[in-house]
Image (cartoon, rainbow, N blue to C red):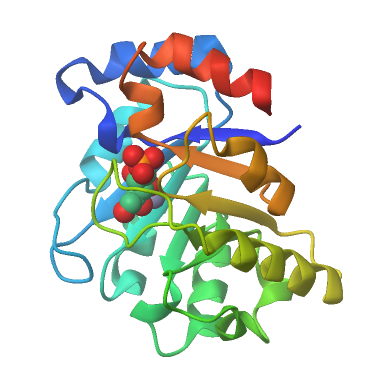
Length: 216
Ligand code: DX5
Ligand code: ZN
């Protein structure tokens, strides 16, 4: 089965514990945590302190997505705060291989995310060490954006690259996922769907998670 990772970026932060319980109870698989620093992306969101708080209110693995400059500087803090996986952006580092090793040494899973304008070829030579590859299907920075349609081709290319390298890494797709496009994104090769607005908006987290699970 494919996995659903609700992004708490679109949650009601005043009722975060309650909403975490709702998505877990409804059957979500991971909690996606969007970390933004106001440099790599224009927005500022969550730091290790909030990750630590989230950890106390869920049994689900915390899928930490670092949209920050100098990600290596913060890896240990997020690992200590309870991250299960740490994903950094290929565009934010010079030496991806070194950082992959550093993240692994903390005992967490490791992923690399690539922006819509970044070629999948940046993953060459790194792919066999990764647990996760995140294909951004919006320009990172904000929740609730529209899915970029050309992302499907990129997901398909990522799937081919993983197969060519006998990699078991999971393909995560992040941005603009809805119950309308989820099936086609899975068909293109996604293993993990991140969804923020489509989980925490509309009918509410419990009902929305259930609708997604029927598609996965
Ligand atoms: C975008 C974030 C996404 C975002 C997804 O910068 O990385 O994880 O929260 O939210 P939706 O599903 O609303 O596009
Ligand atoms: Zn994200």
